[in-house]
Image (cartoon, rainbow, N blue to C red; front, side, top):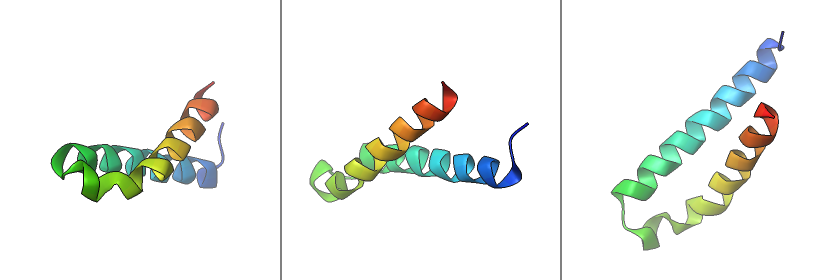
Length: 51
């Protein structure tokens, strides 16, 4: 079973990915372009954690 700190870290990363995706859908692309690199890093980290 995972440590509680590990679970919290995964939930924070998941929350950021979801919120960044919503921001990318709702605001103009030029405004939200600064979120994309961090979104990709967290998304890759979540995919690597899952596998």
